[in-house]
Length: 338
Image 1 (tube, rainbow, N blue to C red):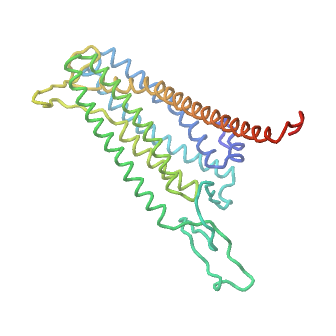
Image 2 (image 1 turned 135 degrees about the vertical axis):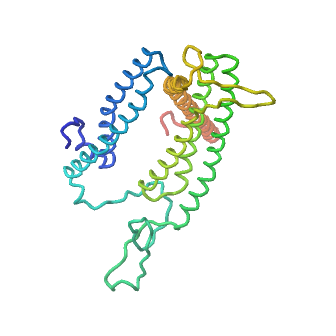
Image 3 (image 1 turned 180 degrees about the vertical axis):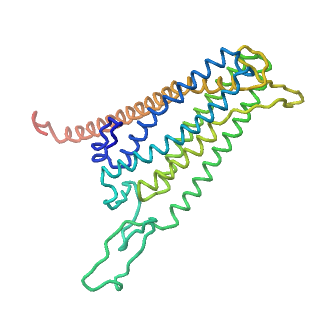
């Protein structure tokens, strides 16, 4: 075990498997490593504000900080490779044969054959084996079914991506108008609208991605996770990069000018203050919006379960009354008879 990681990784690996143990080890190490760039970022921000904000003599610190982040990321990746090899040696993973875990939701039929390393089913005919041997019964499905369903899922999710791009462009136009009418306050309002739009679209897209990935009928959890991660990462990359600036724009016969503004509302040559505003609003608004969405979803689910229980009780009561009515026509029942 890595000596610098106090997590019970061996117990996690024994109970949940190596994938989850590697996840917790990587997350713990990454969280600790973030302290260095976070501290330097706060110092850089304080120094630049002391020198007068964007457009001052301290602007050279920004590319220096970016270069430092590149060095930090390279060093972190290399140290994580050493830690990963140490964990693999400690858990003796090289001596184990990988066993794919079949999903319980996998809709399949059983035929005699095996699955290759690429998860392709290879059928074995009875005449190809000796008389005393018999091929194992293995779960399988049509090879083209998951691929065909994946294409359908990509087509559906592409509509979400298109709607997100169109909505982002619409919010950029809204920022043009809000900045001209409200100045810095309009910039904050546009940033808030962008944050709410990002979280709402992310919530809807995540639900659709989980549903469609399950519908694709992947055999193993590994292929299921790979497909889901690809969908979520692609959308997050597009949905979280909605900051764009344009100097001028012509909309509905009117010309709009959007200069870069600092936090005091003065025009500058750099848009870093507006970018910080956008990121700050996203960071502040993301946890409450997610918590409210989850709370409303859980409340809806509880209300549905409550209605189902009430309906089930009402049906049981009606059935009991009908049974008692039929028993009453035959005569009184004994007091303790069931």
